[in-house]
Image 1: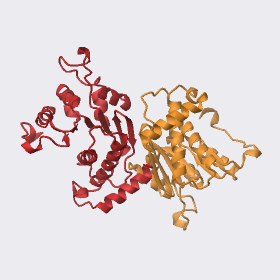
Image 2 (image 1 turned 90 degrees about the vertical axis):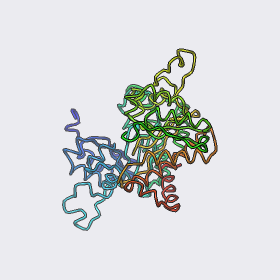
Image 3 (image 1 turned 60 degrees about the horizontal axis):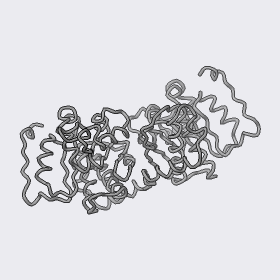
Image 4 (image 1 turned 120 degrees about the horizontal axis):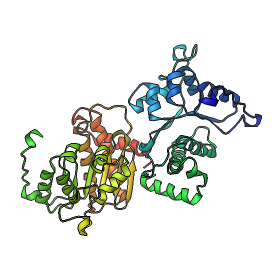
Amino acid sequence: LNVFGEFEPKIPAGWTSPEVLFCGNIHPTIQAAVLDSCSGAKFTALDSMNLWIMTEPTALSDVMRRVDMAILNDQEVRLIADDANLIRAAESIRSGDALVEPEGWGPADGHPGTGPDYLVVKKGENGVIAFTPQGMVALPAMPTSIVVDPTGCGDTFAGALLSLVAASGIVQPGIEEIREAIINAVVTASFTLGEFGTAGIMNLDRADYAARRDSYRRIAGV
Amino acid sequence: LNVFGEFEPKIPAGWTSPEVLFCGNIHPTIQAAVLDSCSGAKFTALDSMNLWIMTEPTALSDVMRRVDMAILNDQEVRLIADDANLIRAAESIRSGDALVEPEGWGPADGHPGTGPDYLVVKKGENGVIAFTPQGMVALPAMPTSIVVDPTGCGDTFAGALLSLVAASGIVQPGIEEIREAIINAVVTASFTLGEFGTAGIMNLDRADYAARRDSYRRIAGV
């Protein structure tokens, strides 16, 4: 937390209506403030972590209900829903059942109170499973024996995923848009994993990216 | 082990040249005896378990070198190779480096002494990764929240996989034959998982199978 403990983000006026808004992992009340400031965003997403899941379930539930997409890892999904079955856990987050019910605004008050429409679950070396309004998408990881440093993989994954959602210009991406976005995310994150820090993606050239994506497509059959 | 401790399988004369021979999980010397009796088999495969990996590494290595395909779970692959990285572990089994060197017959004696050409690694809810002479195939599991009884899933998986290898009539199946065989295996095993014992597949009808396979193809994009 350190310097972010008292952080109050100021969003420049020109940035309040982005195509895609991604709230990286930070205290959920800061994520909520950013969402408030960017009311013109067409598509919103967030990341979180076990700390907020355990210490700030109400504030996290509030932002989870407000965004279009949550990008979480499998342990976080199981922890939020308190359910070892990942498929059931994910569905109960999307339905809102696994989230804290907002005061005066929830299923008991006749409001659907649903969670994010899109839930992308990262499983590390075991791939990705995404839940969308049109159904599930499941993809394997990029197989690799070269694991140098996972730092930044989650942010690379989210950035690459959302860049393709933004490029598609679609506010309600379908299964095939989500699949292509995840393929981009899996392949791009594999470069981050293969070197220290950001070295793997800082100077990544298009040909190396394209070659690895082709290889991934052959392996996964997609 | 029980009744199989002293088991000496007698193969009927008419069964010694099958299209596909699968040696289910049992003491590797019994698997070796079956391989000896079925020298006319076109394609051979085996399963094993942690008990034989730990107590009979030499006998197991011997049969691993003799079959075309090993079908193992991820923990077994890591245990054989003593390597937490699954990709590296699998490659070292296929190359023979992770197997016990046969006496007077191994890399040191100028013999390649390789392991099985095909290694299919089952990862339970995390899907399957297969290593073939033509490259890797990776597929997700069939997502399910209905897990009743995993007993028999491994044998269902192997049977369904090899039935498609046999049907293809191909002695050196390529990546796409292996992919189709794994899809069949994943979908069929998901029926075993969903009910007790063999109830899920005993009366499985073609329409239910086809519907679930279609659903799997949409989810995995294959």
